[in-house]
Image 1 (cartoon, rainbow, N blue to C red):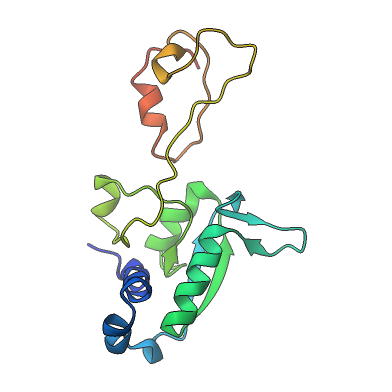
Image 2 (image 1 turned 60 degrees about the vertical axis):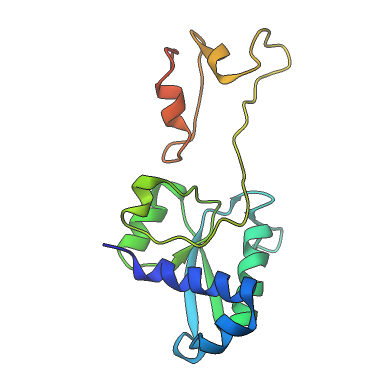
Length: 161
């Protein structure tokens, strides 16, 4: 079953990118406010500033979409490990938090067209020798964030935890 709430976000993104034709058919009056979950711990995409406001590139992007499409956005800072359960439970209308589009997620959610490729990087201390690519971690300790799309790559490597 597709999550209808993310379709609203997809329509809004398409409206901004294709402007008059889509916006003229988009019924903005039907949507006054949407609640959007974000894990505001990943600058520059989304983070909490000194004034305790949720800010960042994702936030600015969705605010521009909302302004163009004529609806308001309420952002909810949500821990990553519960963000998808929250949308499935109806707590949020959409998620904007550098979400990777995967075949598994497509089974239950609709997505906008991608607007950025965040990619993945390997970070090691400068003092670490011989680790330049992921496979170089073989036999070494590694850490990864729970609930993201990247740890599955680490699970395929014979590394210590």
